[in-house]
Amino acid sequence: MTKDTFTDKLIEELCVLAEKTIRSYIFSKFSISDILYFNITVDAHLLDDGQLTFDVNVELTLHPKFSQNDVEAVINEAVEKCFKELDKRMSNVEFM
Image (cartoon, rainbow, N blue to C red; front, side, top):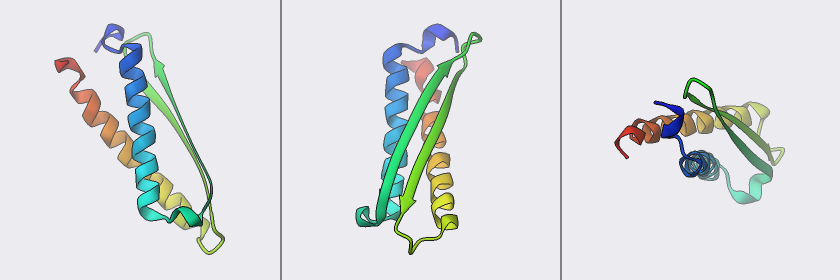
């Protein structure tokens, strides 16, 4: 893929997809009443060689009844699912 493949609109769409995937996954695992703080940041970087990279940051604080290990495991699962969805979506970019 070249830099021209990734329009601003497509990059924005991919960032929104990443955020929605993570949010949906987290809400499927925890009740909203158990979530004390939740923030997702997705940054896309278009490199000179045409590669598009993503930085994903998830901050999640839950009710104290959950262990930090539970939180970290679910965050890792959510981010993994996010990157799978991004890979799937980006594999279709050439055909657009």
